[in-house]
Image 1: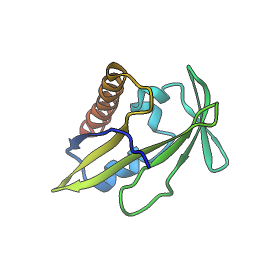
Image 2: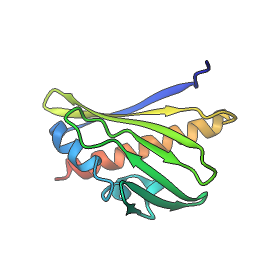
Image 3: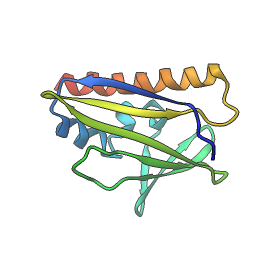
Image 4: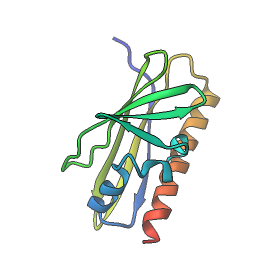
Length: 133
């Protein structure tokens, strides 16, 4: 069994955690804060479709839950599935949102760092949006 190198990218948000979860877990709202989904998501049954530079990808989200889990599986056009762990947890009166970034096989150090920076930028956008409310 092999595991991939990972990094947890996280940021606190000064809003009640359930409010952060409700907003962040809504696939229709994700394009507002997740740059990789800026072209939008289209619902197709229980999955969502996103168009991007690699072509159309299918996204399956965890069902709404009371635990802050927004995990989702992205299926690339070639059938490769990428598991994305995204969680919102209580942090005193606010929230902590965390994304577990996995380093895919063959990914360079520079590409992994770019992905980590992109995830942090997305979480920062979400933070800024929600803290302005």
